[in-house]
Length: 475
Image 1 (cartoon, one colour):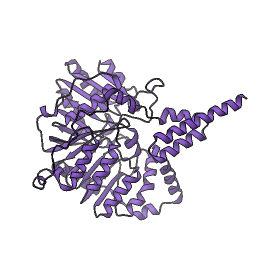
Image 2 (image 1 turned 60 degrees about the vertical axis):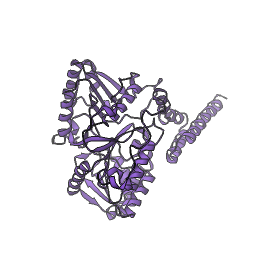
Image 3 (image 1 turned 120 degrees about the vertical axis):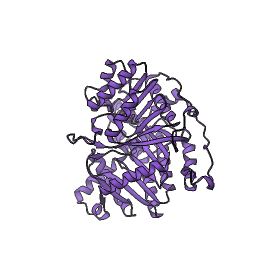
């Protein structure tokens, strides 16, 4: 009798969990995977699903922030042929992308920005530290990884000195990312009196055990006037010239000056309130920030708390707007079907498409899954380049000679569905010329992958890659 009761209870739990997955999961592959977990693992399967598979963030975030945006939804201006030469975002083929972004994002495209690329920690860290050392009012820093090595301690020292000067300092570190070094940097910061918080710390109580949902954003703002964002964390690994380090990586970060710095501050303030409950002082109105350059920029927050799957839509929309060239650089490429279709469609339209990947990935299983996708884009003349070590962590999307999307997002399901990401849309010919030269150098140092090379892989390799591909929604 007891065994029958227990069996019935486990069956009901499995059916309830599987039913919840069917009703709330949008990706059918993810839905099927969770149903199999719930049904095939008695007792533990439903528990795994309720702990790892249920998104409680969206509801909690709405309670804190509400659904209404503080930003106007209308475009800042309309396209006209007379203005297309001086304002690249108004070119006819980008009007549809402008309309798309206006519809699905919560912030307007703003003129008057200056965007400066900073290559590797050798350029980015001294610039960031100099800004911190000159801060007078506020410093807001959010990162996924904050290591407690030499670089991390330089930042901690500078932040502590700023706090002693009376600067308002707030630091937000992801609860998983902080564990990349020991002792954790948060311990050092608290000893020095720095106000630091963890994003989604592990808990079985009210917050839940959100191992999959990570704060992947990289944001630093200084006094509301200078901002930094991109793909770079805080740590020695981003010092690319340190030949003694086996973990060194290549990356690009971006310094931002102008009205769109307000978007970075706004994104940080939302995350800080979500993590701590503290409401930071109102950020400066974009209208109060002086014009610093000719770039039109928009900050895009994306994550499991948002209504729209905006990164999917904006990236696919940008690719669809391309007329001449698409250049993509990403460390993790596990494309969903719509992205594969968008890339292949662009190539078939006659657009030159280049994809730059690391030749040796720091996550081997991601590289296996990636290889399983490459044949179906190589056959349509998409050019794929393998970049030699050190590991290239850069995340860049450049369309024609006018548009760039930069930030923390990788082209994989984790970034699209699970991580909290921050990116910048940029319309600026000067920056695009700089980034295009970066792609030229990368191409010269890379090896082009051929369709024959992919097709002629040994059978065991193909089986490993295909197996990894099966799990791509969860990688």
